[in-house]
Image (cartoon, rainbow, N blue to C red; front, side):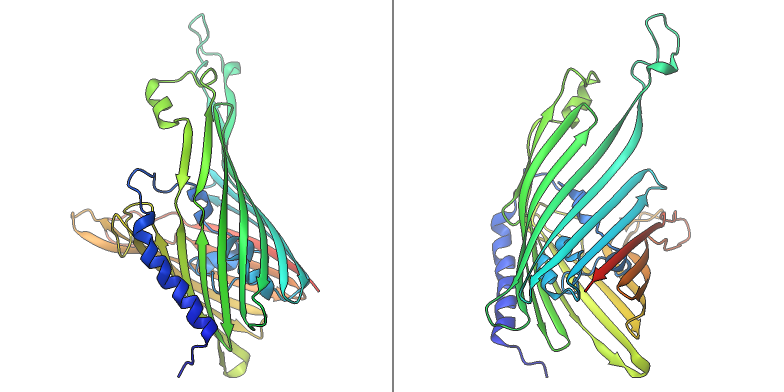
Length: 364
C-alpha cells in the first residue's frame, strides 16, 4: 500500500486546482498552437519515451521539461546537445542546455532552443524588368523560432524529495526581413520523490506568454492574403499543464524498469485529443525505460492520441509510437530516438520517421 505524505497530498492538491481553474483560462479568441515549437520536445531520452518526462527529468534537460528536476542531477555540472531534422530534413530542430548545482538544495540552468527552415528562395523578382528570368535576383531567407530559458530550482525547506523550479522564458520569432516577434513568459514546476515513486506538475506559460509582432510591410510586398496570415499585434499563449507520475522497479540480474505516465492539460480551445472540449483538453502519454547496470537503456513510448478519418470515411483512433536507446559511460550519455514511426495499415500512407540524437555529459 502506498502511503501518501502531506507533501504528496500538497502536490496532488495543486494538480486538482489546475483542473478547477482551467475553465476560467479558456478563451475562444486565443489562437491554438501558439509557440508550438516549444512543445516538440528535446533530448533523446525524452523523445524515445514519447515525451513522458516531467517526473523523470534530472539532468540539464530538466530546464525544458520541469526545472524542479535540476535539484536531482547527479553531478555538479551537466550539459546536453541535441540535433534533429523533421520532414525529411527540411526543418532543423536544435537544442543546447547547461545546468549547475549551487549546493545540495538548489541549482540553476540555461537552455536554448531553435526550430527553423533555412535557405527559402524568394523568387518574387525572378523575372526582371525585361521579361526574362534572372536567377541572380533570387534571394534566400530563413524562418526560425528561438527560445532562451533561464532556470532556477530549490528544495522546499526541510521536506526531503520535494522541490520547486521556475523558468524565465524569452522568445524570438523571425520571418526573414519580413516580420519578427519578441515574447516573454514564465514556467513553474514541482517534483516530489518518495522511495521509488516520483510525482510532478509542470505549468508552462503560467503567467500567459505574449509575443509582440512587428511587420515590415515595405519588405513584404506580397499578395494581400499573405499579410492577413502574418498580422501584427500581440499573440497570446495560454497556460498548459502536465501532471506526471512514474515508479522505478528493480529486477533480477541488475535490470531496472521505469514506467511513466504524463497527462497534458491544454486550455487554449478544442483540440483533437482523447478528451476534447472548448474548455479543457486531456492528452495522455505513456513511456517506459528498461536499464541494465545503469549502463544501457531501451525505451519506448506512445502519445499524440488523435481521431483521424480513414479512406473508408470511418473515424479511427491513431497514436504516435516512439523507440529509443541510450548508453551511459563515465559521465557521457548518448541517446537516440526514433519518432513519428509509421503504423502501417492498408490504404494509409506511412508517417515519416525522425531520428533524434542527443549527447550529454556530467562533471562531478
